Amino acid sequence: MTLLEFKDLSVTYRGSRGRIPAVRGVDLKVEAGRTLGIAGESGCGKSTLAMAVLRLLPKTAEVTGTILLDGEDLLEMGWGRLRAVRWTGASIVFQGAMHSLNAVQRIGRQVAEPILVHEDVTPAEAGKRAEALLERVGLPPSRARSFPHELSGGQRQRVMIAMALACDPDVVIADEATTALDVMVQAQVLQLISGLVTERGVGLMMISHDLSVLSSVCDTAAVMYAGRIVEQGPAAEVFAEARHPYSAALGAAFPVIGDPASRKRPGGLAGDPPNPAKLPEGCSFRPRCAVAEERCGEAAPQLLEVGAGRLSACFVAQDGESIAV
Image (cartoon, rainbow, N blue to C red; front, side):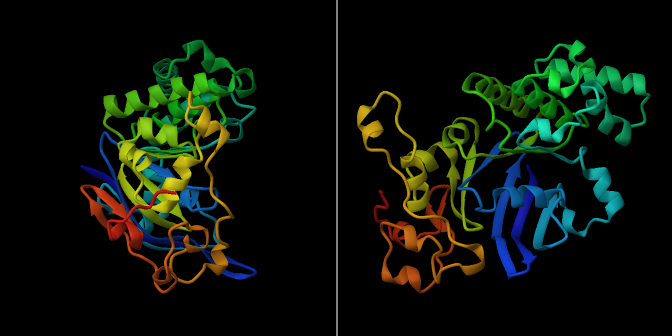
C-alpha cells in the first residue's frame, strides 16, 4: 500500500542571482511497512525533498508537481488541514536533536505537546502517553523530567523518534537522523527504527550520506544527483551492483573493512557537484563521469528500467554496458 507518493516534484528557490533548481522532476513512493532510502552528496536535494512533504520550505521556494499522502495532495491543502496532518499523517526526525528540542522545556512536556494539540486528552493522560513512548524507544520513563542538555546525543535522538511517533503517523521521515551519533549508538537507533517500521506498519523515508546504513536498513534506495533521481532499486543491489556511475563512485568511496588494498587505494569522486544555477548541458554528472560519451552532452538521460526493479538515468547502463569506476 502506497502511503506517500511524489509525482514529477520540482522545487526551485528564488534568489538574488535568479532561480535555482533544487529538486527536478522526482517520482518516488513510500510503501506501508517498508523503508525508502535517499542517498547523495550534500546539496543534491535530499533535505529539500523531505521538507517539501510537510511544507516546511522557505517562502522563496516554488514547488510544482504532486505530493500525495494517503491519496490526498499535500500541496493543495489549506493551512488548517495541513496542521492536522502534521504529526498525525506524517512526521519528521531532523538531524541534530539538540537543535530541534526546546532547551528550556522538560522532555516529557515536549513529547506530550503534539498529543495535546491533536487529541482530546488531559495533560495527565498526555504525560502518561509520553512516558510510555519514551519507554518504547528504550528510555526510562523518569527521563520525562529531564531537560535536553541532561541527555546524551543518542538519548536525545531517541526522544525525537518518540515525538515523531507520538500521534501514530502513517509516514516518518528521518533526515540524517543518525549522522551525529557514534557507531554503537547509531546501531541501536537503527535497530529501533527498523523494529518500529515492522511493528507499526509505518512507511519510512530515510535520508543519509552513509550507504552502509541505507543498504542495511532500507528496502528500496534512490540515489540523487543535482536534484534528480539517477538510480533506484532494491537497496542492497543498488550499492552492491550500481547501474549508474555516480552510485558506483559513492560505493567506491567507502573502504572495505579487513581489505588492506581498499585502504591503500581509496576510491572517490573527482571534482565537486555542479552549481544548480548553472547545470551542464545534457547529463549533469557528465563532467565527473569516467564513462561519459559524446551523447551524454547532448541530452539528459531519462530514468529508465535496466533490469528487474532497477532504474537508471545513464545511457551507458541502459545499453547494458559496464559502468564500473
